[in-house]
Amino acid sequence: MSDDRYAPYGRLAPKGTADFAFVQHMIHQLADNGTMACVLPHGVLFRGGAEGHIREYLIKDRNQLDAVIGLPASIFYGTGIPTCILVLKKKREHSGNVLFIDASQHFEKVKTQNVLRPADISKIITAYKTRINEDKYSHVAPLSEIVENDYNLNIPRYVDNFEEEEAVNLKSVSTELKKLEKEIQTTNASIAAYCKELGIDTPF
Image: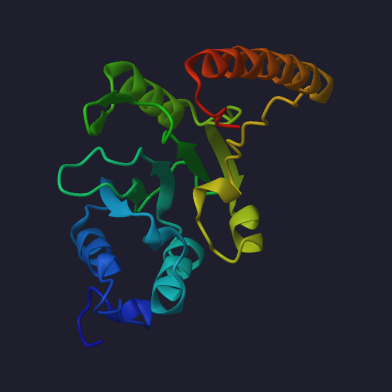
């Protein structure tokens, strides 16, 4: 806690999940007019304890979080976990809100790896530059909304990408089952006839 990189936050990042220690180090080195983007596991968005305290300090006291970008799983070699990008600035143009982008469903699967295509990258950059709300993709959250969520930055809290499943037509399913039942009876009758000709017992 005597280190200038960490002391202002009042808590140290836990040894087991020290992701925020790297973030704090990078912010300390960042120029006043600089922009920082770092790739991190999703846990930094919602884990509590010391990490929750540091996250709150970054947003409430320093107001340096500019955007949270959710990436697809399996885009890095050696790990399949989904990751996110935190964009931080010491001097933000949009100090009254934080942009959330959910790009987790926009990728191409190449063998066992997921790949961000040029169009996917372009979409992320455009969303970041324009900072507009797009259904199931991006949301500009006022700081008051983040406070309401107790500084939890889990992306589904801000970007709803739920796809409603098509309703099941029970009448159609019932009709299809009845049709299949008749076909099974016809097939069984044919098998029974063949078994009788061959002098073997019917298997049903």
